[in-house]
Length: 464
Image 1: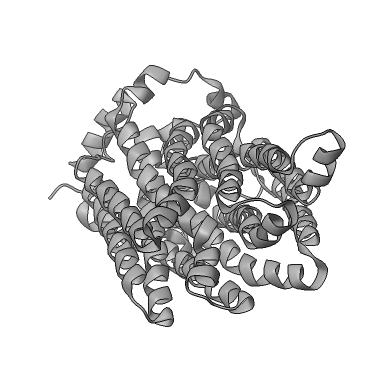
Image 2: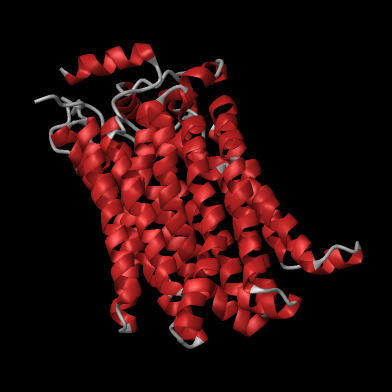
């Protein structure tokens, strides 16, 4: 039977080997790569904290600035629009300049605009700008900064993580997003009730700037640049040659023709579109759905809003763990598919069921499973973007995530429109159908077919 990773015997990443020993048995491996991934998890938490906070504050902003729910939906979508548009430039910069300083600059930028969200309408009024326009501008700029985060994470994974650990590594920032989004609703709601919604944004901004500084100090673009990486860890990473051994190797030309001529790239874009459509319903409207449609009290609604994001954190890591075992057992292509397709199908079914169940607790449980399942599937998406792109992982993953956020631009506007015209049940059922269509695309996505023709021959040889 064809196997992509002939040397993977257990499917368990080396980080879990007893005493952190290297496969050679002579020297204990340093685990710098996992320290960096822990930072990715924390920064992933911050990105979701800074995008979920406005959905918790939406009720206050709507009342204070006399906005409609559809107008508030456009504010949500302003973030998502720029977040999507700047994915590709952010990934390209990470490939060319390295994820260390690109992400540092991005964190400081978006943290500044997180703080400005709290005073956007006040500042805008001084210049004759409407409240809606002020919020649109600030959230657009915030999204442009956050756009660099996930392509930078993927660039780090491509540079630092060997193939047999890649699905787990891809799941770590996703889990961070789930943790951040689960912490945000009760924490932000508590701060808003006690101190006002403005101060919650200042707090989020301060945390972001702190971790931007930590990232700049602790991270290097490549293992060869980090003084704490020993020979054993370097040997573990050396087998997964992505074409980057020195800083100068990151400054080669970008093969745009090969990238956009590769069907895998477009299929990942479309599949991620379907995931993003669903994800942004949870990020934008889930709290409103619980408090206004399901009639939950505000504080109880904020607590129940954490359920999908707790599921995201747990099921992201589960997807990563199972994904690494799956490629060890089934090979690269089938190993990625058996995570992506069932995950997306489960998300669709759970959303459909959760929308129809009258009991609030069971309904929230089903909806939470749907959110977690879509992130379980996303671990395969992100790992596959590296499989396909290799040293251009930042660029390709940025384009893929652009697709996800194109879905995220549409769903915050389309969902309340469908709900207003036909009800929330058809709005959520439509989202379930979009995700199921995205799952079907994995019948033709081939992770073993990468954009580098020379590397294709190498992969074929490894598979024999």
